[in-house]
Amino acid sequence: MTGMILLIALLLRLVYLNQSLWLDEAIQAEALLGHLGPILQYALADFQPPLYHFLLFGWTYLTGFSEITLRIPSLIAGLGTVYFVMKIGEFLGNRKLGIIAGTLAAINPLLIYYSQEGRTYSLTCFLVTASMYYLLLALKKPSRPNAFYYFLFTTLFLWTSYLSWFLALALGVYLIIKKRWDLFLALCLSVSTLALWVPSLFSSLKLGLGDATTIPNWSQVVGGASVKALALTWIKLNLGRISFANKIIYGLVVGSLAILHTFILRKSRSSILLIWLVAPIILALLVSIFIPVYSYTRVLFIVPAYLLLLAIGLTNAKSNLYIFLLVSISLVSNAYFWLTPRFHREDWRALTADLNTLTNITVAVPSLRITAPLNYYHLQAPLIELTPQSPDTQTIHYVRYGEDIFDPEKRGQANLATSGYTIIAQYTYSGIQVDVYEKNPQD
Image: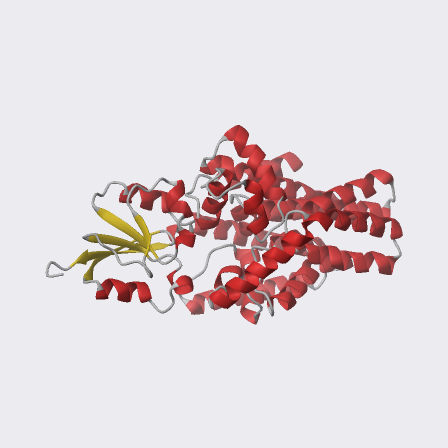
């Protein structure tokens, strides 16, 4: 049964694995290609510890830089998450609990989505889940191998995500309360490995505070503390990246799902799963009051804890109807996502290919910070940052991506109007809008 669940997980994660890279993935690819300087320099500037960057650097050196190869490590990590969710389920209950938990993880829309993304989130989720498995083993059956694997996976997840540090902090308190000094020592040793990276953390915090000051809408990118952010975490955890234009339908779906989950979770009990689920969210939200770091993507590693709590509730329920409902909701959410292009990743690949068929044009963007996808897909036309630069060609294709963040006052559009340009067409790709401007003949 384990093999069947992993096969299902693999097949679901192969769907659309070759989508166009979106902005953050393209930045990662450009860094790996050496276009942003040495990889260590990029890792020092990124708001994540460096393990994923170094892992992917070695991987792409061997396999290349295509969309699929960039995402394979996340795919493998996603399958590893499913496996360890099953193992934790079996440990906490029995084989039935493991199968239910593994099935929920295999078909979870959010875990599937980030198993297809060339960023660190899926890897962090896998490493945290493996660490929690060995922690549970070591708590019940103290042994050197269990303590060592707990130390190993904890060390690795600490080197992939700053927000995972909050989980380590909460677990440290838990181990002190339980007086498990052996495991507390292992945790302290894991944390001590970060000593060399602490200066980089302060540099990242300085950059984050700088962006929050100079770019007022920066919290839209990295996330801030709000009730909406908390609610969105729960919604995305269950439905993935889909939404509904009709807010009434959206509200009915979310409300019905909340009632169903409340009914199932009322019979779930596990203190360590609750720590895993709740502590990182609370601590990240508190920090985000001062530095906008919170987003549901960055706490993806709490999803297995929630699914395990659901699985415990399902095994305690008297009817299999609830299992059928949860499985159906996940499968329908996946199908809706696959069949609705507007939910897919930004299609910079198609946009760049079409722009490269045109001649005598200039491509403009609100900020040069979003040009990585155009560079990755080899844009041939001249590329400018619109706001400070006056265009001097007849036709401008203005890619409005990130305009609300980098140019909320629409100075770029005003600059075009002042320079004698008139909008003549608009077209869209998934996640991207482009306005076409022509210069008036009299100008």
